[in-house]
Length: 384
Image 1 (cartoon, rainbow, N blue to C red):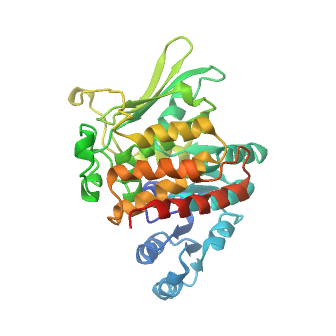
Image 2 (image 1 turned 135 degrees about the vertical axis):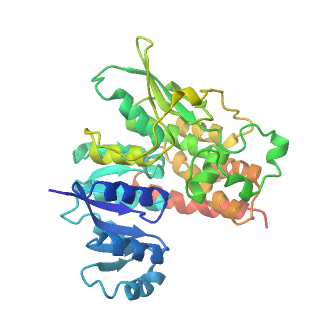
């Protein structure tokens, strides 16, 4: 039987590469549903190629244009709206859900998929950043596996497979350092979005590329790793590794370190999440260690304040990571729209952390209210 897959966010970088993996293994995988936020034309193209049972466009303004493009494919059901995302992941035929949506919007459909007992292939790190305790508790209650798709977390997962109950002494979470690794703070004051979007090693969407440039993305990955692997934040070390060959490593009680290495290619962690515990063939470049130096540096948290703010949020706990995520989504978008400078992003996030209502024991409704409040505060703090 082919595994039926629902891809939340099929038109983004992860979603499109996941479809490449599925196309390479048509005997194993079949697309049940594809979803997008606004990119209805690409969604229609994907539907024509993979013939899913359903497609969902989150932005309801694009429902009719999408329906028009697919009117000659009556077997492909077309839905629209946020509620449709929550409902489609619960469909009986679905075996696994790849959560590749960007931002807070990925939380609700992920929770619905967990409650429907679907295997989760997690590429939406904000889900665990915002509501890690809730997500992990529900996955345990419903006996749902959460397999990481981020290259770093997949590397950690691959390093601990077969280790049983052996304690993780430390996680070594690698970071490329982004395009501004060698910049001074004075230089950072003048960088533009076009500078920030030129990532040295990975081809990603705009939002995550900017998060990589500020290193907020790495802060979010620290939070995600802490929840996924049950390791306190103070036992997670960020290492800047410009070559992005060692995707992350784990140190054990005897001092041994296991790492996963490979060329930068997101199809590998996507496929590993789909096929675990099997390893399938993948038509990808192979690593040649004779041509790659391996360098490591400590991150500069004074230059990259967002990384320090992420650690602070995790240490404070409660809904503080949710506050940071909401503020970050606002300033990230503002920077892309030339409404905020690069360094101002960290300043606005810090001020939002000070002003937003703190709740030490949040539930889902608290997360929703916190997200709304923090976004409003961050918007008010943006330059006029």
